[in-house]
Figure 1 (tube, helix red, strand yellow):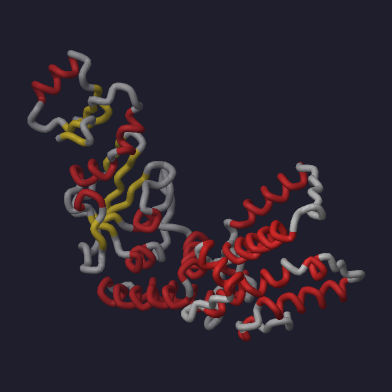
Figure 2 (cartoon, rainbow, N blue to C red; figure 1 turned 135 degrees about the horizontal axis):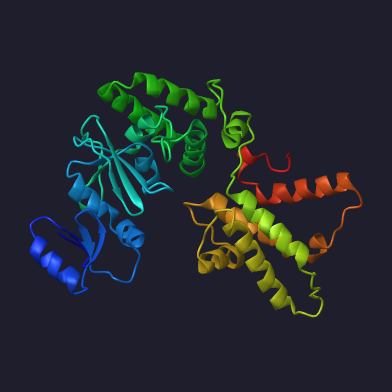
Length: 337
């Protein structure tokens, strides 16, 4: 059998494989497993083709447990599957770990080369079963890892999507008789929403439960930015000599990118039409006003040159500008916070 022009599994081709080995055209990398790739290491070749090999060794494989959530082999090369075959298969850089389990459901997904992959709902339920590492990584993720993933899911997709996932888990749990696992998962999700009070262990989940969620992926980014800025001497660039047209252009892009990085995205031409022609798109009036309000502030050089004398004046200045920008968003309490 050939994998990506490099990999052979020796079944009925013993004579031809042996001849190719003697001629230096093949390299053995495992039991009855050979490759034409004489350049890369066996680990590289196997990892590059692990899903092809999985289909060959375990034709009925359903990728499950932690592998179904991580969508890749674990750090130690472990791939966890459900299969009728019981024997573990060790290859350079990859270990296939089969277990018994319910065959694929209709909701389970097609993976590469016809392999099946547990649905997201099923994968979360499977990972609610505790497991221990025996000579490698554990078959399932830890409670901390699950909480971090659910918090990220909520952060990126919103409450509606996480509620949908919970509903899907409930339906799958009934089919697989995993009500116990669903209850544990439901307690975590409910605690993230603030409707339940389970004992969370991850820092991100605890923070969300307490009403102060944060994105942990931003911490190293901002830490690195802080370090780089601290190492870099500031360069003073005077704007006193630029023309009014140049000031207007500068203010426009300051307002444009200030909103863009916050998620209010327009084409540059659309934003210019809003700022300079007062063209407010009917479908996005609030977003348009955000850009327009920001431009009105940053283009007012008298306003931008104001420097507060104390913290109280600083607060007043921020509230005033916040009220101008968020005028059409009452839910943001313009000028109040």
